[in-house]
Image (cartoon, rainbow, N blue to C red; front, side, top):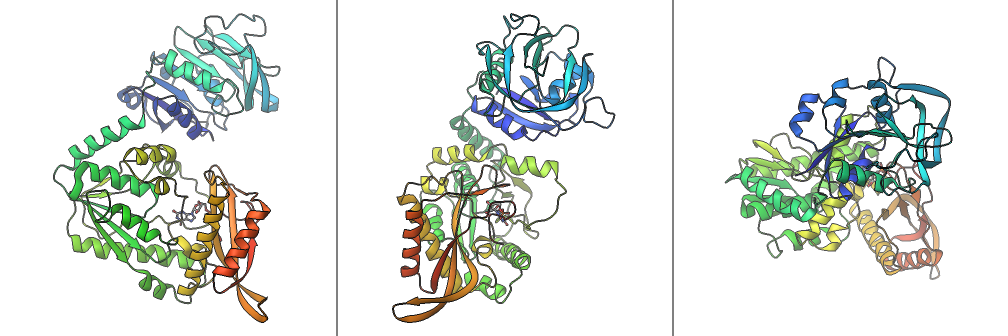
Length: 520
Ligand code: XMP
C-alpha cells in the first residue's frame, strides 16, 4: 500500500493535510519531527510532507531535521515552515520579514524574473497562472538554495514555491491544504500522484476487508471484549470485530440511564440477539444504580467523576463474569491518537470521559484498536460499508457522561425524562425542517431553573428547557446555529404541550468560547 508520511513541526493544519491527502486516495500518517530517519526509511514512504509550524528555522531551539532527510531521494513537499526548513538545510537563506503576510494573497506562477520558470514543473502542472492562496508566515525564503527554481511568487513573497526536481524536493510557502487556496488540491494531487507516484486507490472498501483479515489473524482463537457505547466509533469497531471473529467477541453495553430517548433499545436492535451481527451482546441496565450514586450531587466535575468511575465499575463487574479475555478492543480513532501524542498541557476545562475507557481490573493480554488510523468520516464510510444503519452511523457526537452534562444541577429520574422527551422533539422537528445537523451538535438540555408560568387558568412553577444548536468544525470553537424562528416556535409549542414539567423554552445563543458546547 502506498504511504505518505506527514512530519509534524507543530503546524495547526497537520490534520487537514492528512485529510486532503486521504481524499486523494492516498494513505498517510502523521508523525512528530522527532522520528528518526531510520524509522522513516523503515516505513517505506512514497513521499514526505513537512508541515508548517510557529518557530523560526534558524533558531537553535526550533524543531529541525538533519540535512540527510533531503538527500534520501524520497520526494519531499515542504509547506510553510517545512518549506523554510528545506531552504535553510539545503543552503538557502531564510529571513524574518518586518511584517507578517497573513491571509489571502495572489499566487503568480513563475518567478519574479521569469514568468516561464514553472514550465515543466510536475508540482505546478495545470495550475492557473494567477489564483488565490492562503499565507500565514513572518519568515520567508529570501534566497532559494542552489539547484532550486522558483516556480511561484506573490507580491510580498519572492519564493512562494520552489523546487529541485532532480533531488525531488518541492516547497510551498502558502498552505495548499486550506480551502482558501484555489489550486491547493491540484497541487497536493500533483505531489502525491505525479511526483511520488502513488496510485490514489486507497479506499474504505479495501480498508474494511484488509482490517477484518488482519483482526482474524491477530486474534486467532482468542476472546475479545469491547465496551460498546452506541456511538459511531465503538459501533463500527464492533461490526468489524464481529465480521472478523463472530462469537469470540463479547460487547458490553452499559446503559447508564443518561442516554438519549430510545437509544438503548436502538443499540440493542442492531447488536442484540435480534440484530444483524454475530457476537455476544450484554446489556447492563444500570440506570437505577447511577441515579442513586448521583442523588443530590450538583458539582459538574463531581458528577463527571462519579459517572466515569461508576461506568468503569459496572463494566468491570460484567467483564469479571466473562472471565479472562485475550483482547480488549477500543474504538480509538486517529484524531484521539494524534491529540494524545502532542499533549497540550493546557488547563483542564472539563474532565472528558469516554465510555469504554480502559478498565483497571479486567484481565486481558492486549489492546486492539482497529480504527486507530481513521478519521471520523472515514469511520462512517466503513460503518455504512459494513451494513450499519445510517441513523447510527450519522449519529451526532454524544458525550460519555451523556445527559449527565446536559442537566444542570442534581440529576433525578424526572429530569432525565424531561430532557429525553424535549430532546427527541427538538431533533424530530429539525429533521422535519431538513436542517442539516452534519456539522454540529443539536440537543436539548435542562437548566436548573424553575419559573412561574400560566397554563389553562392555573399558575405553574416548572422547569425551563434549553435548546442548543451549534455549528462547529472541530468542537474546539463553535457558534450558535441560526435555526429559523418558525422551527423554534414549533419546538417550543410542542415541548410545553407534550413534556410535563416544562413551562419555558430558551434558545442558547452562546458561542464557544466563552461558553462550552455542553452545559456542564
Ligand atoms: P464542550 O462541552 O467541552 O464539548 O465544549 C466539546 C465536545 O466534546 C463533547 N464532550 C465529551 N465527549 N466525553 C466525551 O466523549 C466527555 O466527557 C465529553 N464532554 C463533552 C461534547 O459533546 C462536544 O462534542
